[in-house]
Each structure stands twice: as C-alpha cells, then as structure tokens.
Length: 102
Figure 1 (tube, helix red, strand yellow):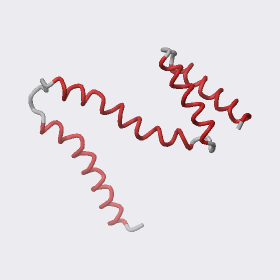
Figure 2: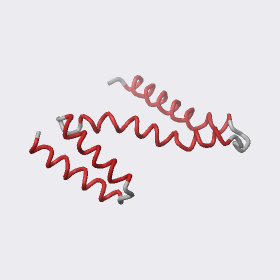
Figure 3: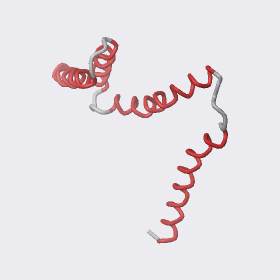
Figure 4: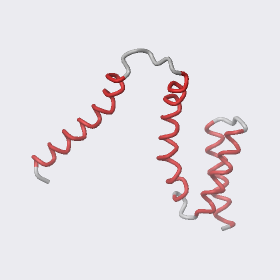
C-alpha cells in the first residue's frame, strides 16, 4: 500500500473519531436538564452495543437453533438476576447440549 494513501486513511479515521467525541462537547455546553434527553442518552450505549452484538450471536454457532437456545437461556438467567459468569456458563452449556439435539 502506498504511504500517502495510508497516511490519508489514518487522518480520515482520526478526524472521524475526533468529531464523534467533540461534537457533543460543543453542542451541549450547558447541563442537560431535559429528563427525556437524559434518559435517551443514558440508553444509547446499551442499544448500540446490543445492535452490534445480537446479529453475531445468531450466527456464532453455525446453527440458528442452538444460537436461539443459548440466547433464550441467557435472557432467562439474566432476568432471574444471575451473575454474568453464571449467565455465560448456562448459555454455553445449553448451546453444547443443543448441539447434540440438533
């Protein structure tokens, strides 16, 4: 790859990263008092992480049914307020057992 092209790509990536972090600081100089906007901004990271993670969950095992079994077991365990390690272990075990069934 040419050095100039690589330098341009690095500069564009740095600029985009900088803008994403600086625009909120410039746009919101005062404290946000709107309860609606505060609650919206509170849940944005969770929504983005879920949107990036969930599609991979369905294709991670190579079989949609075992992936769905693991997802359902993980959701049920998390709703029952289990710790993260217990949720992960239960999901892995259920996918393993589901692999024998399907």
